[in-house]
Image (tube, rainbow, N blue to C red; front, side, top):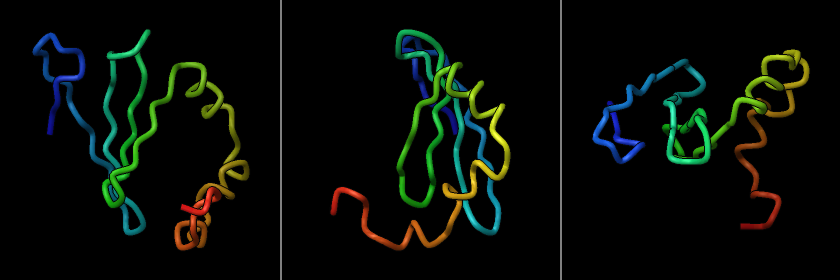
Length: 83
């Protein structure tokens, strides 16, 4: 799967990673002020764009730092804003 994220007609490759717990698509996005990584959850369609600074911080994170983010129960409750 590819998409044109720059408007110049160039196709950007999409990487799909799948496990028994999740499926995500990852691609480079150049539509902002600089390059970013777009991560899309296949199940929900939710996306996040991470810039190089955010990715660097993620690289420095320990696996223990990510535990609150990967708690499966957080996906079964309403969002913090009640929506």
